[in-house]
Length: 294
Image 1 (cartoon, rainbow, N blue to C red):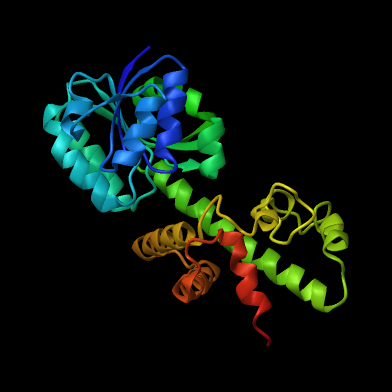
Image 2: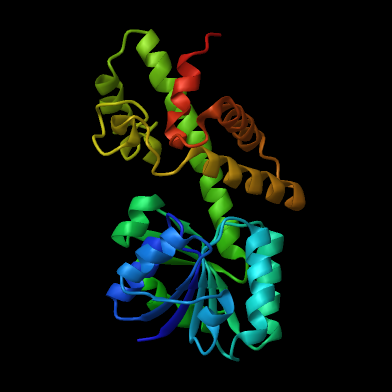
């Protein structure tokens, strides 16, 4: 079992840290929020007074932070106190440039590093069923996989450094586009007189099938566990989808990729969030489509 410094105990990081404790690891946790620290302590984490205290003499350092600027700032603070050969895993979803900077800072002090953003939402973090998209060299990934295992059901080796972040923004751009298309189809079907269940029964077994339909159907009824059956309380908030779409558009511009549908999805989620729905599940964008007529 490892001594792990864990920085960032929000909706995702908090449950992830607790799953590491359940697996027998010694987790030293740090966050700026006293409430999240209290929950972590009650769950078996030891509490660090500062980020530096969390990482000193740790074999593994895990960060789960809101944005690239936070990851870079934390790495800048902690790297001088990280021991050589420490494994540093960043599970945040951030821009490619910041991910590369974090890898470079880890390497400058002799640490090994992995970018490993996640998919699976809050329930995945709680249940330990996340998918990790991991980027790094083979040695770092070999060390990271057993650490990630208690927090997730799958780790996908995506390639060299920053490949995990690249996979995450590509995946979530697909998710946003398919969700919007799914919402449009269900709304159009309703206006054409189709029952939601009838359309679901067709689409879920036909060529239009997608995760957005079969697992996360945006209308109440067909998939009882989808947020549509819980007043669109978020598993994955629209504001977070907007953030990821912004990262995808930034990556598209940097790489020269043409992403017209990704860009349009970004614009639609911008409008949805600007109208005050950032804390609604991202599938709740169907409400905006329902209120509009061509």
